[in-house]
Image 1 (cartoon, rainbow, N blue to C red):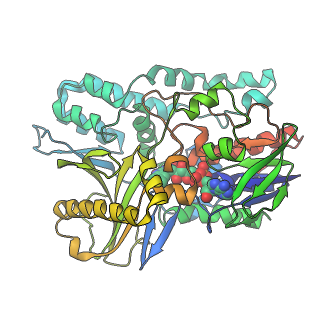
Image 2: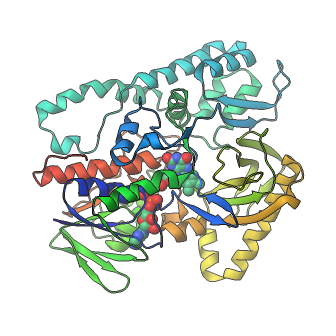
Image 3: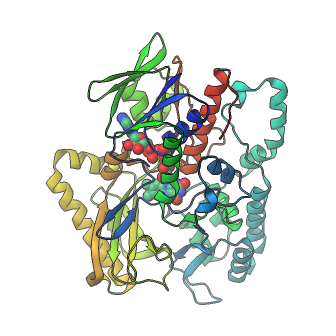
Length: 506
Ligand SMILES: Cc1cc2nc3c(=O)[nH]c(=O)nc-3n(C[C@H](O)[C@H](O)[C@H](O)COP(=O)(O)OP(=O)(O)OC[C@H]3O[C@@H](n4cnc5c(N)ncnc54)[C@H](O)[C@@H]3O)c2cc1C
């Protein structure tokens, strides 16, 4: 049975591996000249710039995702770094006890609890409740699969899933809490401000921070030394070893359908590829409204398209610098307030700056040098995409002008680094869109926002269309690598089931 897969990101490659393990004939079609999609890197003058990977869920044997990754790659061959502090947040308030104006988000829960209690003993009850809730997450079992359960299991086997009820009930209970509603419960002004600033001023479900903190504490969210390549290259190798085929610089423009079945794909070159099954591991909007011309949609999909139910995860304006200096005594990740608001050419207004100093991965810069990157999340990606399409010269001018301001601010903050900058690399939302085709340059699919939903409204099959599946980070709000991997595995398993094959992993 022949399966065509669109996209060689983590989702497409993982699906390819699982389907090859079960003897399906697979070919991946990738429009870019390389693999990895958003999880990628590029080299310039001896520096290795990353698209942004900071942590991977499942880097410790106690986490179920470790076992999923291990089905594809040798996790023990990768060195993972677990930071002691996830992020340093500089606030305007100074806390009375130490005179410090930086909130250290420790990854060790005992340390975090002691630290927060020392800052704000008056908030003891609220702090202890928060830590208890994070510890509760550590005890909850994540189901090995969610989506295909209703489809493939007989009723008597579904009963076994009752053990995951505590997870569902817990999610229902904590769902309404956001960083802002939590901050309101705190009396201490320093802590209050720190929690409001957890997501750069955005109001997000508190779960977006408590879930990673639960796994940070268990050292299950490490950073792979070598960055994205250390994780994704072995998946590609596995796929090729299993006999999978891949074609680069091959853009898919249409998914061919006949009598409500997907029957193949049309390439930009005009070549028609027939297939028994088509899987799209590419962008959600492109797949549904361009490749399938909006023919297989329902009211939920219409709402998603209009961003009524979920918003698109923002894109990023990212300035990456290769600097001839070590920054060993600096935090690896910090956010600090700006004296004056910074307005991007796309109209976004920033009161703070987020800096990532890669002083922990020696593979990113030559000895004695460091990669520093500054990220500005933007909901106005269309500005950059339209500008680049209409006037490339102005686009280049605008991005350089904004990057120059950013560099000047960094120079003030980190202490005269301007003269030591050897390489400047600027990626805008148009860059993310151009290289990966993600709608509005989104870096993680749908935004989890403040109304996080336990059951995703995004389906991996479309109404009225058979032999077609959709996978990747758009299938679950918040996206990220675990979603890409899991959606690929779940779908491969479902395809096996429908074809009378017992899913196996080798
Ligand atoms: C700045 C930044 C920081 C991040 N940090 C983290 C992190 O710390 N941890 C984490 O888990 N996640 C992180 N992510 C998110 C993570 O990288 C993505 O969610 C994940 O890589 C998505 O994988 P995917 O395979 O679903 O989609 P993609 O990576 O988008 O892959 C889709 C692929 O399909 C190809 N394609 C699209 N259209 C076509 C077409 N018409 N024809 C052929 N090919 C096509 C694209 O070129 C691409 O290769 C980050 C992302 C960014 C950008």
